[in-house]
Image (tube, rainbow, N blue to C red; front, side, top):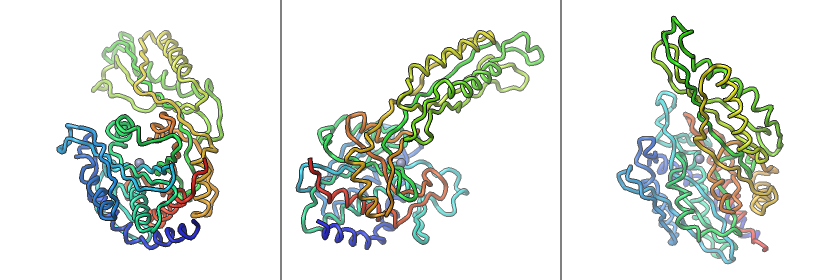
Length: 413
Ligand SMILES: [Zn+2]
C-alpha cells in the first residue's frame, strides 16, 4: 500500500493549478444564506457536483432541505461516495456557505474573485470552508485516477447552512439520512486548525446564553430619585457576573484552550433614545462556555442568586432567560480517528499533533451527539470571516494528502 500512497501523494502534489481553478469557481458562486441577504448554496452545489461528475464520480446523492426564503426553494446538501474494498468509510465534511465580506474598502481586491499571490489565494470563503472543499475534490480526483480501490470507502459531504445554525445543513442530513453513517466509520471535519497543522479539536465546551432583563421605573433625568434606574442595576449585574462567576466555577482542564470556563457579558440592547431620561428597562446578554465538568444548572442557579441580590438592593425586577443552550461534546483523545490523524499529520506535515478542546461550537458536535466520533482538523491560516481571507495552496494539497493517508490505512477491527 506504501507505493500506492506515494503515487497518490505525487498526483496531489501536481494539483496546484486545480486548487487555483477550484477556488476561482467556488468563490464566484456567492453562497450567502437568506439571513445574510443571499440565495443560498445552489450554484455552488451544482459546481461541486459537476466537477465530481467530470472526474467520473457517479454516486452522488442530494439531500436538499426545503427553504422558501431562497428562489430555488431549497438548500442543497451533496453527498458523494467512492467505493473502497473494506467495510469502513472515511467521511469528510465541508460547508458551502460563507459569511458576508463586510465593508469592501477593507479588502485589497474583490472578495468574490479569487486572487492568487504566491502560495496564497485571497477571497471570501477561500479558507472557510473552500480549502476543505478543494482538498476533498482533489482527493476524489486522485482516488478516481488510482487503478485499485482504497481499503476504506470515501464519503464526501458538502453542506449548506453551517454559518447560520446548520438546520438546513448537517442537522437535516443527520435527520433524514442517518443510515449512511456508522459509529465504526471515521469522521473528520476540516473546519478549524492551526497554521502548523498540529492541533486536533476533540472536545467543545457546553454553551449557555442568558438574556438578563432589568425592569425599574423610567423618569426624567433631572429628578432621578423619582425613578429606579435600570441601567445602573444592569451595570451592577454585569459586574457581579463578570467577577463572581469565574471564581464560583473555577475548575480547570488543561485539554481546553482557555483551560477554564468563561462568563462573558456581551450584547446590550438599546434603551432610551434621550440623554435626559432615566431608563426603566435594561437588557444585556451573558455568553457562558463551560468545561464539561461544570453543571449548566448550577451556573443558572448562581445567576439567579445574583439577580435576586441586585433586585433586592436596587428595588428592580431582574428576569433571567436562557436564549440558547448546547451540551458539551467530546471524543476520547485516543479515539481511532485521532490516532490515525496523528500518524497521517506526522507523515505529511512532520509535526506531532495534540488533541485540544475549544470554547467554540462546530458541526462536529452534531456528529458527536449521535455517537459518531468526529475530530476537527485542518492546517489553517485562521483568517476566517476577516477581510483579505486567505488560504494556502500548499496546505490545501497537504490536507488532501493527510486525508489520503487516512483513506489508505486499513482499519483493523
Ligand atoms: Zn467554517
